[in-house]
Image (cartoon, rainbow, N blue to C red; front, side, top):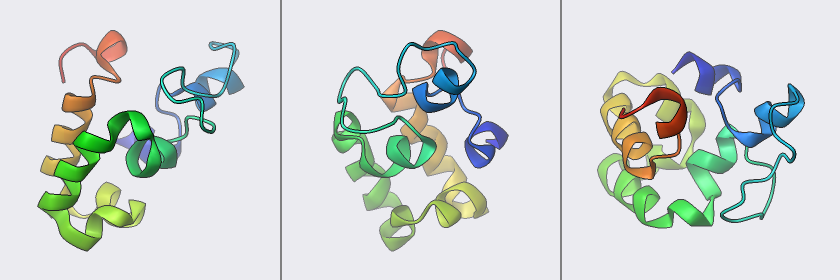
Length: 94
């Protein structure tokens, strides 16, 4: 959670900044830099998972300040992260 809040999650924008990724974009969409904002709110590779998140959180799912900070949003956030499987290679099964 702290890594997502601080922008230091193992997503390509951060990994590229610390020379651990050749590019800042995500290979599944190549739409823009793979930032926390992109991962949570706009990456087309996770549209299905994001729709489930939005169904659970309603309008709060449209703002990072709610998703990352409100206790009632955290269970849905962690479910979203687990279903995207984006961090599986780093953290294992979350």
